Image (cartoon, rainbow, N blue to C red; front, side, top):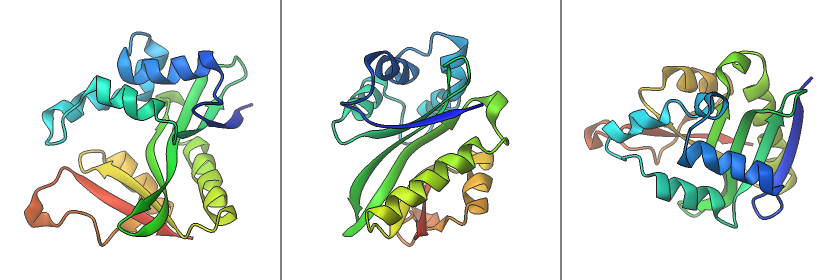
Length: 170
């Protein structure tokens, strides 16, 4: 049995907020590091990995979270998103969707995306955006399965970016 909860960062219970931020900042426990174990690879790419910037990003007042917990109360997945403007289009921008490895391919990510789609529809937002690193083939496959496409604003091949911007219209 999994539980999904929706929070603004300022409303997130302190222990959950601390747990989510710890993922980006410390990655000390096995449970926490599993959710973002691909992040250290980012340091080798053009974007770079900056823990302080990640912590600041995750604590921004505009942040909202969908948090998935298991029966024991452990976080097994989350989505960090914001209502934003993307190239003059109102958008729901997913900054991160992370699912613990042992919960992947069990519908957790799909359930998160379904909630994101419902939130976008309820708020009359027509576009959902995600940024996906090119090396993250599993993530790319997941979003393609969810009917996301490479957006027109995604960097072109000649720009040699390490990521794609994917979008889905609601």
